[in-house]
Image 1 (tube, rainbow, N blue to C red):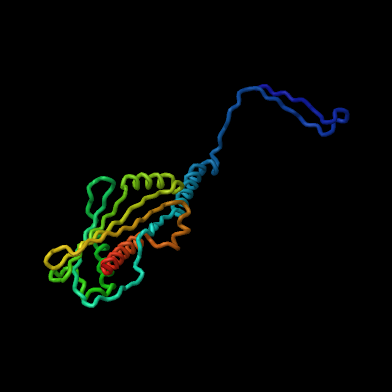
Image 2: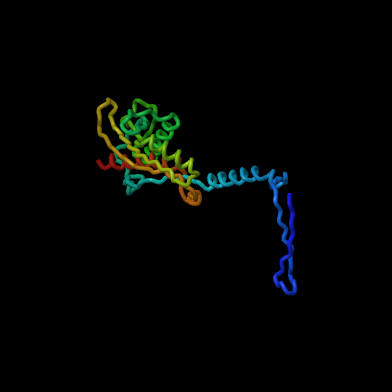
Length: 239
């Protein structure tokens, strides 16, 4: 290594504010000290990334809304008939994705459909007895709920939403179709009524702020089943 020094001054005559400039020639070797900051750099970056991911998922929310296409009864319960009869309910639920064959609803879904049907028929006060098992009832109501939607589209949208940490919204929609067939005790068909309602499901960042002001998806689906039965009974009562 060769070292040489020279003197430079800002004011050469009086040599005021002078400083020494040293030139060094040779091969530079860098030494990296194992300081605490260096050893903690990678863990801190991992922690920051974890906090960002956690915040994204905590701020993400979901919400289900109804299409409001179903016309609800103007009066509930409706006026009682002069002659009240007993009725037995049988329920069936299925899901259809695109043009595929319908798949049976889960037992939990069947219980929800059955429970809301029994609630609506009992609260209508149109029947002297509402049963789920009595075959000797005057009227038999066969209720079939078909949920129609795109399972593939919902899966892809949900994956993209989760992969982007809710930055790209996730969306899914479905239509709830209810068909009710009324029969007499001998099995003769008395009438058939169709009702339908649509629902949409959203997942998005910062949507958590709106969640306290909206019903949960389970509550929305429950109310849809209940209202489909109410609309069915109103139409049946008016016929």
